[in-house]
Image (cartoon, rainbow over all chains, first blue to last red; front, side, top):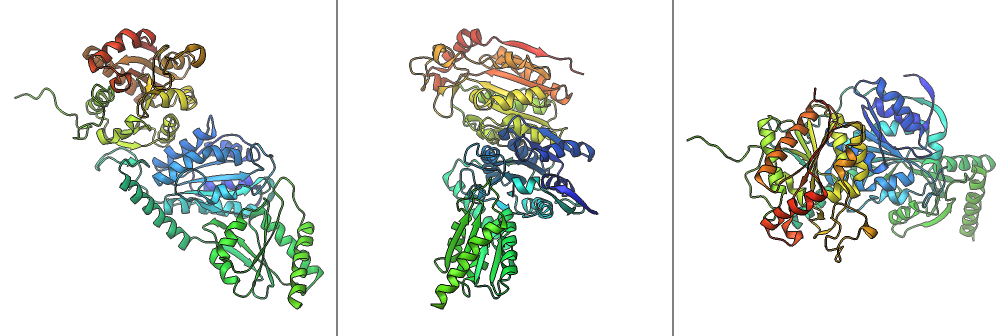
Length: 360
Length: 247
């Protein structure tokens, strides 16, 4: 497919269709309305496509649950307050081992917050979010192209592990337009005939459940899920690095935050060609790229975490470092976009202070 | 010798887990008999609720997908949209369908989803120990209405079939009881009709069963059956509230 100019929300929706998603259940909330709107236009055009506007976020995620149990590639999208409402269903789906893609076009919070953007849902996304002992895979794009690519891949990951996958965008990524090359239509979809419900013909009846009356059964189920999550941590960690080789300070940022950080680093390099700032950009927030951070701390001791929140991912960075290295932080808790120049100023101050202290 | 009565093949060969005198086991049997008679065991997908009937899958030998509390109609919607030719029914209690899940119920009904709600009304939250339900009768004592339900404070019981029958896309709504052989026969007939409507894709169907709960009503089993007639059915009249033409 050719390069085309698309909104982030539209790119997510189209990529889902290319990935074989034929069921979309959603509910309006800003700043992601363009996504269900696009789906309501596109789904009737594709064979077997179903778009249904649910009566609530809660209903939408439970329709997703039902459709996943019946074997469909299915998706819902929302924004922060709506994702809070969906957590019940996401927990059930994790417990029932059902695959689905949930897109969060994050806005400001807590509460009604703000309709623009933020990275304040990091904890909610990476710590399970709902009740119980579970995780969801969290993909963090930083461009419209990645919004498309990661949504496309999210369906494969969801099916591979039979677990909900979150695509964590934000109001900026959802609303900007950028050139995108759409992934090719997925021709062959995974065979799910070994677990879905479609009527007990020629096999014993199946129950898709998360309830275990006997205490021991629930413990076994939780350990089974845990082993799956361990596999995901082993296989699916993703990140991007820039200029780590000779860096004296490493910036860690994701999504829109990483974009601003990249701009800031570029700016500083222009001003001082000897400046040595590297970047680690996690593209999976869970599983978190702890190893690369820990490994980097062998040669670099200063880490600069930048988030569009008051500091959430910083906890994971500290956990990854296990006490080694120094962690510095700068955050703007959403709804105000810090320009790269602002971030560059803060970064430069930190960087030059550190270099000065080292010389002493 | 001719066999006149046996376990339907849609029922697992297990002792059910319900209390003596509970209506659930009767309703399970009605469903199982119909699945056999209508040859639907291989097409049926049930959405059981949290509550006493969560273990329905230990009894009914068909595919099942557990729903979160109250979300039966939404989960059933998702399943049915993917598999329009399956027989999809939610199995829900009064708290599940008419309190926490009222929105899902109303909207699935309003969309005319071709699903069936098997709605068991025993006027209490039974699994959790007999708390007040949306269908608890005025003056009725429960563990959270120890002085009796006061309509000035908690409102009157919700009449689900009456409300749903106002919606255009509801194809079939009937209230029955499972407290006597005659009523059980009628209940089976109603359930059959509901399934037929679903198979004919005429829209949403619901059968509400007035069902005894001796344990939480603090009554004997015979007394409970009598109470369904004498008190419950006076507040929740039995009968067909809506039926569209079945193709």
